[in-house]
Image 1 (cartoon, helix red, strand yellow):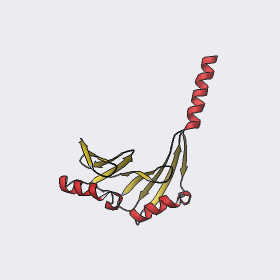
Image 2: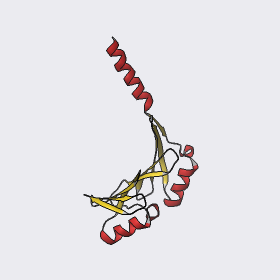
Image 3: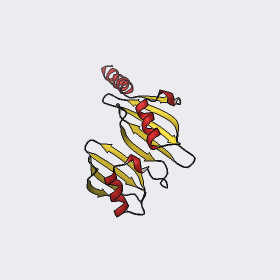
Image 4: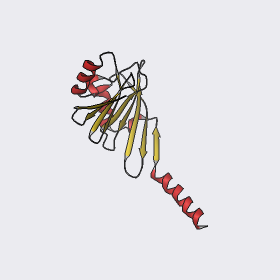
Length: 148
């Protein structure tokens, strides 16, 4: 009986620790995220917004699109952008969302490639190219390595 109670409590705690809120109404999206989208993705429509909470952090995911392209954007709890992903390999991320050092290196070393993903973690930035190459940079945008 004690083992069943412990397993049941573990399931309850896990459920309570991860909660996802789906919202079709983009008006609940905070101004910081809306401003970021307006500045870098003019003409895009916010399709929906997800807020996922767990014990340590909150992920805010926004799906946007226009007639041609669609993107997934992730923001942290303070609505700083942490990840951008193109949903189609034919559409690059807007240059305005990336540090100049990063776009300059990609244009020089991979002139035919498109940057289709970007992720910022503690101390690094990782970009994904449409040729399945990932390039890792430090927080300042200095090249560290290529992962392919």
